[in-house]
Image (cartoon, rainbow, N blue to C red; front, side, top):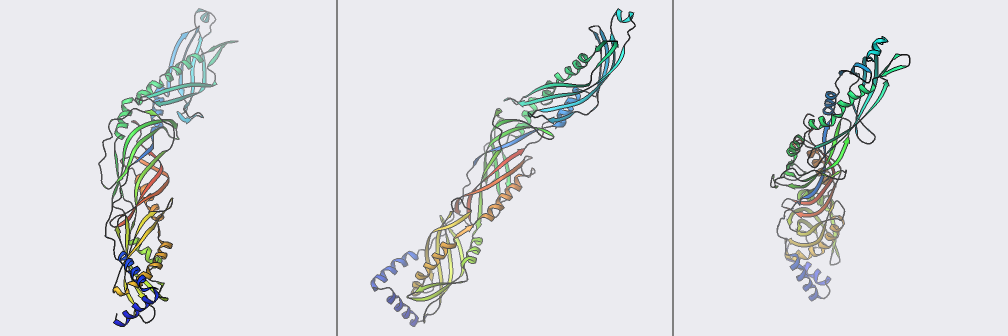
Length: 484
């Protein structure tokens, strides 16, 4: 710029400021504040651990229970005997497979159908004298056993059983007119004797040490690698703290013992670092409820992404301003963002079309602003905006004082960066990773009702990183018991 332009600008400033001395003093003080460009200073987001509770269904598959019941009540069995003036012999055959269903009160019902074939008659001399020989008979029944199953604090199963019959064809015969021989007691006694042993054999099929051994294998720290959008490789870490039992549920093809795992959950940028899980704790009773997973996760917005957004909002378009009663325009050409913790700084390169006969000029305004999360929202807003500037001539600095006001007003309108897309992508990546048993050490985590709450913004070296608390209803499926 030549001397003529400088003199014209000086004249305009003196004429527009009112009292000259006041205008000079104001300019000098404001210029001193604007000359302090923010230094580059990055911070780092800390991800605090959270307390979580997970529902862990312990599966007891129906085939295990069915195989045990079929050993106790085989396909056929026979018996013979004499007593109470009668003698008998018979064979019992199962005519249907053993079926397992759920009762209205939530117990496991075992049902099957039986037929009985045999012969019976009166015993002793009178029967021989009257030539009352043995008579054939048959019968049929539906047998039902309702099972209850639980685990004690020592991880030992407690099994109860209630047996009921419905004879569809009564096991009795007519020996001679009006004289009946009823063998129901003998047949039922034989079946009862077998089913009474069912609780003991079920306990033997699921011994305490086998259950404890399997649970001890699952009682360890979990470290799951996860890749969230725009973030470095991370690890979801779970350290178990306590186990509780919420009762027995009968599902379509298995029994489910509802276990509640209390754990400390964290997201870290490195593997390991957790204290060992220790010995398997005693089992305790807890309410039957859904588990709740909480994780601190980073939601990142790279400075390049924010820069592109700012340029879309008000870059490369004319921004009017007034200088000494004359209209000028500014146009932003480029923006460079960098951290200046706890703020973020933006170096804005612009051109100015000055009013009147003055030449156009170019320069930079550097602003710093503190990013905050809007209360209950999904957006980052820039607050406490401060300016510094570096134009190509000190004499043109006055233009930036006028340019500052419309820039500040424009930023106040649009300086809220929406993170909903990044939040959705982070939750999707988290769900995909935790539902894959190959990544989680054989435990399938199922997340539902997921949410993400933003809490704190930290200007890191290459991105604005927001601390988010992810919450979800979660269940974790363990492997089946031995024999399943």
